[in-house]
Length: 129
Image 1: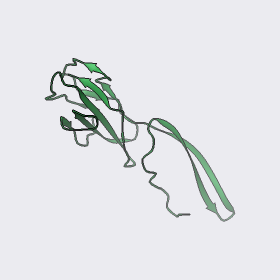
Image 2: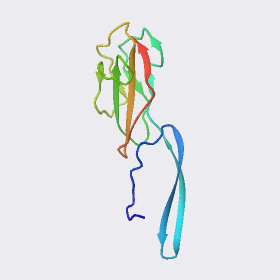
Image 3: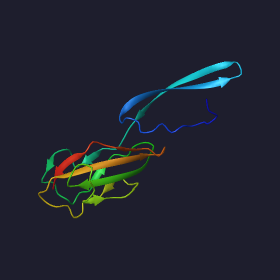
Image 4: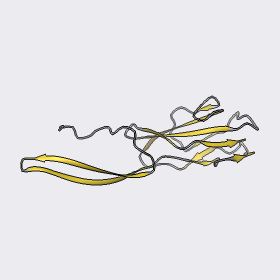
C-alpha cells in the first residue's frame, strides 16, 4: 500500500500494448480500475536498414513520438557506439549527417526519452554512406 499517486515503472518494453490495474482502498473496501496503453519509440526513417551508398546531404530523420521529451542519436563503428555522432539530448526529429566516413559500415541507435523520464532505444540501423 502507498499514498503516492504515481510510481516509476522502470524500463518498459517498446512498441507493445501493456495493461495495468490500479487498486484504490476506500472506506467501503478495495476497488480497481483497468487501463491499457502502448509504448512507442522513435525509429529512423532515413537512412533505412542496410542502406548503401547513401548521400550525406540529407539528415537523419524520424517521426515524432507522442509524449517524447527528448531524442538522442548515436552513430558509431560498432552497434551501440557513438564515436562518429553523439547528438546529445535534442528535441528535433532530424540531425545532420556530418563528417561520416564514406564506404564504412556504420550503426545508428536512436533513443527516445519519454516525458516520464524513461529512455528506450530503437533497433540499431546498419548503413553505409
